[in-house]
Length: 480
Image (tube, rainbow, N blue to C red; front, side, top):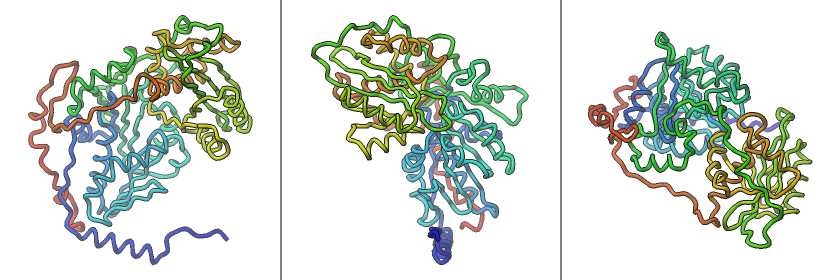
């Protein structure tokens, strides 16, 4: 008989008693700090809100504050108040909880809240927050919610059915409020360039003048008053001009109208240099699961010299998992690379685990935090500068065809290539060190900027907003 791992009835009674005791304690005054654009967005009462924003606007941390505040306001409801948070990948959830939720929760009386790490579920009184990931859609189905927050909507809504088939029906039972927040990822659907991307469709819906249930908001990185103009412009310098409108200003652009890469950028060498190779990398873009049976796996080997990178080999084949393991071992044995890069999501997770447990291959898991177009675009300055060379081989034509047709057609080679070049750019042995970020202590009421000039001073808009929020006055009598 299987062991019952559920808490005993005695344990559950004890937990209820502790929570009841904690909830009888006076609630401390909590201060929730938002920038003025964040406050404008979250205070809007429209049922469906769409936020198109530039990087570093603060969507994730402000959403965490808004959700904890909402949970406290509803914690003594007779009916449980249910919230769903959907993120890109499962591994993000624990990090977001520890960085953004835990510091707020630590200010509440002990026992008022419970975080279930295994279930990725937070409870405060009679409210529940389920944190789920788009890459595990099966974990989302079968529930209903009062509030649904979709983080990085530009990425997760590339799977159109995530909204239309899975999440939208869950919003019906309780008439849920829904928030779609993210940096846009193009006007067109990545799977079908003949139709618009779902995030763009929803954004346009919220811009319709007669629409009462939907409202869209657009903010740039300059609208974050906690960042200086110099910091934003430093970010701009690292982003190819073709996508600055998207990544900084939160605008929807058509990324399919112009290729990212050109054949002239990749000169072909007849042979390898006799000396001067300082670093060797094998990069893998994998696919072997049943739902990915039509996809290819790609492996690229690159040697780094003092002045440029040489693509030595490129393989783009279909593999079952055992074959993929054998191919990876064979490539490593042939080239003896210093590291093997594997994307830490979907099919790559099984490969990473198997290589770490059963081989001595130096595998390095890569957790992408941007969409594939943005990752590929980040490599264009290196390519345009002529720093990428190809060793003459039968794979050259296939490599150039996929690279120069991107973002149309197959993109397995582009995924593996961008993963590799972005790693090399940040490798410690390179002349370029890892990037560092400035730590800025700044009053939340600083002015926001757009295109280098100030708007109405944020201090005038806040009008006493920075004073502590006395949540106690917003609680029902049972909490006092």
